[in-house]
Image (cartoon, rainbow, N blue to C red):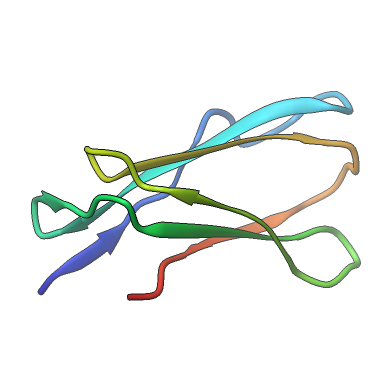
Amino acid sequence: MAYSLSLSLSKTVAVKDIEEITFSGYLKDGTTPLVGKNIDIWFKPPNNNAFRWGTRLTDSRGRYEFTLAFNVSGEWRTETVWEE
């Protein structure tokens, strides 16, 4: 098994408050999409603790998507997690 979980962003910098950014990616075993799997997205805002923002299910292509609007400026860290 060669699992892969990708993460792409619609943009890497929000230039104004409450600007939406879409996080998306694919979960696959080699080239085979993994369907109906929970993907968690975690964020760590500036000067604060990390938190799980939400969960999405992968679709028939193994794809997931989160769209968020940020209201705190600064450098955020993000991570997507899948547990078998």
